[in-house]
Length: 398
Image (cartoon, rainbow, N blue to C red):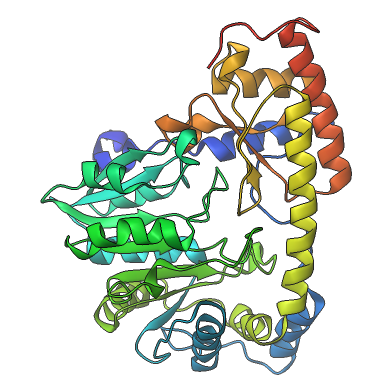
């Protein structure tokens, strides 16, 4: 029996993650410094860990309701009201998921299918297009450009819209570019959304990691709340990647549909993680502020280091990535990353891993210790100097 032929083509032909490829290569390279994976180097704050430990001591090890503990959904509703000015009913409009990634998958499966188009601004998180494909829909990439500061402009959105457009993935603050959309940017695209049949999947996992003002949710604009699914989680904000805890908030009918998929495929999120999540939302604003301040310091160090190396990049306003251009070196993104790892033992991710518009860039994460960042930048500087012929210009140009 040919098992490969038995596989569903949409699954068989899915590409492997370009992020994991370089993470694995770095693990096999002696003395490598990895700036590849978007995972906080902070340990989960103690009071969150303590809440998880206490839940185990109390024997709270059983299934929770499919939608998640009501107390956690209430905490999510309070957080969204307090931080974003959004009001949701915790009983009917919020679902707790296994990380933000499950929420993305649930949202797309509930909304999109054969014949539907899912608009995906790129460069962006690697999971959006595969999840759309697995739902049976057709992803429609929209190229974001540095000249627009990697924002989604009304012109680009209008060009992508067709009668088959069903879902707009809205990934801001953005991974990998660090781009943010301010209120005036959101107001520019809002009329197009209101005048279409689009449902917006707003991935706001980096909403607490902005550096020039608070995050503004697209759902907070007039007329957009009911047609926006707000997705967030605990991994980035609270350094809780391994706890696998996320959530989505939206229209009751959409959340109910997501809950039906969730109850058959997952049952519920880890109970211990849910108890820890309550503590995070209720009592850890100060810890978040401290981590944000440290990320901001590292962001400035990274920007200065790449610019010293002759690799210019615009200043990211959110998340914890820089996205410098490498086209001027004469190397493709993949060639640059492979050679940098081989010659200087530094792992970064080719921009092409985040979609075709990412070619000519690399993603470097600054959720690592400042010592590792400085050593990595020194190695990148040496590598760039060799490419440049020490003091000469880079060959070619971008």
